[in-house]
Length: 537
Image (tube, rainbow, N blue to C red; front, side, top):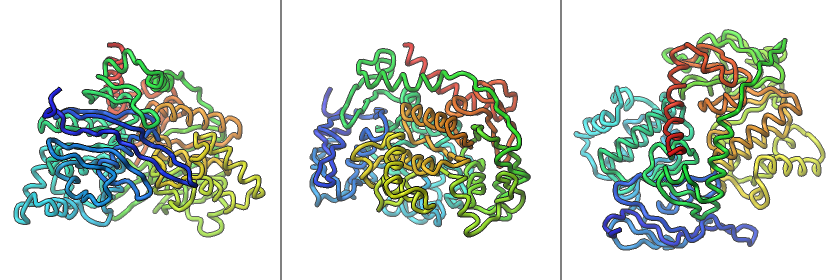
């Protein structure tokens, strides 16, 4: 291979952290090349070092990180990644542009999209003020936005997660970078939005001859878009090759375990319905508006029975998270009732609301934002026990260690803080914090969307086992049809703020005749067909 064919070369990259005088290595002498115009995917579990690579090559690691190694972009002089005086503004943007995992967090929520787009264009001198409008609209039209003006005039919170992600892609692409770094851009998206974003990235690669470094934990997504795949395990490359070779004949035990974990989740059988009366949680004619023009929830009715696992499925922006925030008391509905054991809790305040904390627990979608960055993992999990005055200090410590171990946070990781942990690890800590008070109702708002396949299976099995042991009910919100089919007794399908139907668990969705449910299923089936074709090639 000629040097001019390599657009990005990372040589002997090492990243480690020191805590309590002990070194924790995240990446170990990692070397990789990205060919010009290639779609290269880094695949691995959360905590394997995938996002650390993206942060290291863009200078976004925290000061506590120790970095060594070299990076070459195009034919330019090598960059020593350990050089603290290096000006990263020379790299970010036109050489390396990043699409972050959480699009909403990377956009300013109180500034319109137009202003944020203009700021980026003017900063990189890509357009004059008089030409900015046509330039932005042209980029959005090329990337399949039907109404660019409405999008530019909107705030991020007025757009769905999928649209926010596509806007971040548009802003990165218009810089015409040598390398586009996409860090888990589809992990938080529903199947329809995921299909749109993947198609958009593939279109960008083909039409603009764009080199893309794609990071994901989803094997099916990796198989759909990649030219080559690097399997990363514990900071080292376990395997590298074309998708057909990787999935049909994996050489490494770690790769085989990843494939096995996904296939186990896919092949679970139907789960029988377990209706019991009276319901532990009942929602009656609930409505929620954010303004006179924006109605998020419309006449929502739903019942959750004791010891039941009820799933809520729908696209991003359909109202799933708003519904659970109303149940948890973080939002107040305009109309309707939320009954817990027959008692209306929709408008409780102060101490009466706090009394419900032990009975109704919520696992947030954005785990990192829900954790105190100054606390260690163990301190975070201990916090609800102290707040609710549960157990003795010694018993609290034992419980915290037990639940952290249950969700895969072991050893030194229990003493790390959220900034030094991966998104998936933060998600596991949030799950342990919710479970530790043994709630009657556990609300999981995309609780496993940031986790890799093996950990998804472990967490789902853990939730099911604890639910059977302690008898609590679970309200599982997810855009992932596979997860809901494998775990839930019933699945309620939400579209535009209201439920269009409620199906049985397991293969119950496949019996649906509703056009919206059939659309969601068709998107999932497309992804599965692509993955299975690589698996059997």
